[in-house]
Figure 1: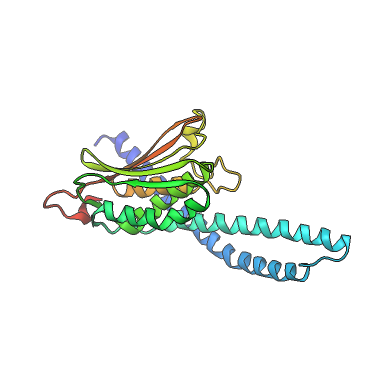
Figure 2: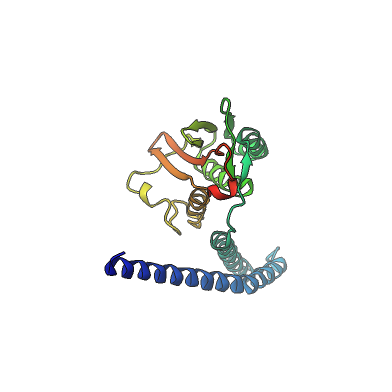
Length: 249
C-alpha cells in the first residue's frame, strides 16, 4: 500500500470512529431527554383533564394552548423513539426465512386497519420461493414501515399490493400503492434522515428500512410516478447452499 493510500485509509478509520462516537453521544442524549419529556407529557394530560369542560373564554383559550403543547410533546416523543430505533438497532441475527407464510401473516395482521381506512390490501405470494437469509424481526419491522407509508399515501378506494418474487440471488419484496406518487425532484431525498413529505413524519422510517436492507446484504429501491403511485422494492439475499447464514451478512 502506498503512503498516500495508507494515509487515506487511516483518515477513513478516524472518520468512522468519530461518526460512531457521535452516534453514541446522540443516542445517549436522546435517551436522557426521553424521560423528562414523558413526565412533561403526563403532567400536561393531567392539567388538560381539569379543562375538559371549559366554562369561561379564558378556560377555552388555556385548553387550546395546552392541547397544542401536548401535541408538540407527542411529536417530539415520536421523533425520539424513531431516532433511538434508528441509532440502536442491533445487528441482525441471520437465519433461513420462508417469506411467503411470514408476509401473508403480516398482511393479514394489518388488513383490518387498511379496511378501516377504505384501502384494499392484498398479498401475492411468490411461486417456489427459496428461503432468504434474514432476521425476521428486523425484516418484519421494515415491511410494516413500508405498509404504513403506503396506507397513509393511498386515498380511500385505493389499493396496496405486496408481492414476493425471486430476483437472481435475492428475493424482491415489493410494496406498491395507488397513491399520488412522489415528485421526481423529491425522490432522491426520500432516504435522507429527517426528510419527509408528510407533515407529521419524522423522516427516519425509510432510512431505517434501507439500513435493514443493507445490513442483510440487500437493497431498498424506489419507483414512483405522480398520479399513479409508488413502489418500494426490498431485496434480501437467498440462503446459499451449504453456507453459514451468520457469515452471509
